[in-house]
Image 1 (cartoon, rainbow, N blue to C red):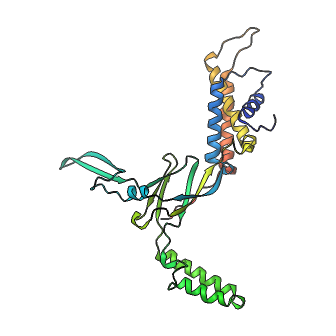
Image 2: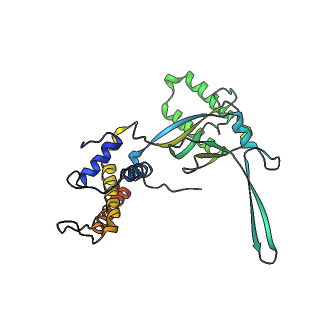
Image 3: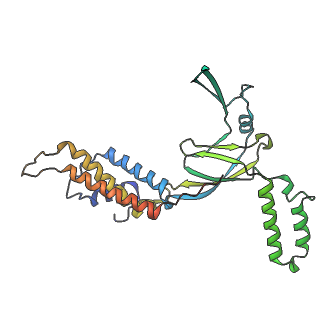
Length: 283
């Protein structure tokens, strides 16, 4: 099909682009499945259409708090220890022991990036249920005269409150690595309570089996075809110079070089057109 909607249809499309069934594409089925996985992984990790922003709700458990507050001195569960030795000139070999608390939450494997966390750093002094808070009193008085209150003044007051909250209440740090599937929360776990919910603002990879339009993406089709072409040429490299009946000679090197050129052009197009530019990190 010209518009593949499944895994096998996309593989068949790539083979037809390379000459099948007129030509025999010397690539094994196992290799085609591996190349398919590589193409989808590259699309999910680099293409802006391969991900979507999601908000995951997670409920803190008593086990999470116990693991986050465990100390190395108390031999807490979830605390990992590492011993390292180094030769310091003039001192000799010195042994150091490092401890790291397992202050992390297990993240689903389809999450490829985390932006921020909501709710766990919310101060009770800014809560709408605290009648002595400035925000509560402001809303209480302004809503009474809502029909005669200027929205500009209300917007400026709320913006000022957000600025105060940003400056006076430090934002908690988080750490995430896509290969760990762990979200580390550098917070005081004693301030959290069991059954409390936090919201994780993150990016998740699209599952092509659920959203079959991924198989028909122009980039995925071109990239997989180039990968299959590269594998085809690589398989034929060992037959370089071998003549077939009729004087035909296999030229695996030319197929391989053409595929590498196609892949280079596709990746350049990815960086300039489809890839989300990196953001500056401000400490």
